[in-house]
Amino acid sequence: MHGIEFDPIREDDVVRHVIHELSADRGGQIVTPNVDILRRAVRDGEARRLLVGADVVVADGAPVIWASRLGGTPLPVRVAGSDLIWSLSRALAGQGGSIYLLGGEPGTAARAERVLRDRFPGLATAGHLSPPFGFDTRPEQFDAVCAEVTAARPDLVFVGLGFPKQERVIARLRPLLPRSWFLGCGAAIGFVAGVHRRAPVWMRRSGMEWLHRLAAEPGRLAGRYLVHDVPFALRLLATATRSRVGTPRIPVPRRPEGDA
Image (cartoon, rainbow, N blue to C red):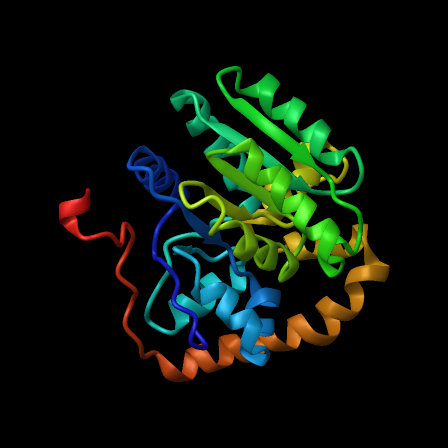
């Protein structure tokens, strides 16, 4: 879709794949493009590179799912980072694995860590950090953040800094933690901590979650959603309807069968 290949898999498939790869000491990265992220990738070469460099690409946005179906290469279901933070933590708890939470407003990551530890007693929490705004533009602070995460040696790092900043941070961390998995999860750390309230289930299922977020943060999101994302989503659906061409991507795992 616009040159971004999506994996036609469900949430539980992602979880199984991550657990399998961790058991084989292989790290990786999950990205969950929605309409806003896809729009940016169409216009920005760096944003596109940050997406195509990931190991697992799943759609976090109803219009992306609708467009895939209209275009004749249907994705099975939306897979949201705000759901994966729970399901991956649950799975890691069952394996005695560890997580690290990076992002959110001051104190948010610490609160989210407590929530996940209470919900999943077997989960090891390797650490948390809510870095100061603009840390990624200050080399010394950026280096210090990367050093702290690397020293914790987590199995899985949830990075909630918003696209594309979180993916830039992940790109820095992956060579330092080649056996770890990374998920850029946007506002999910805040949702877990209870700092922000997620949309009701019916809004998520009907593709209206963006309206809930718009109502919660109109000053920050009105221009992005109404001026840019809604027109892009309409063009995406129209293009998919006209095309109905393309070949689905081969599902993960992507390793050769002999490595399974």
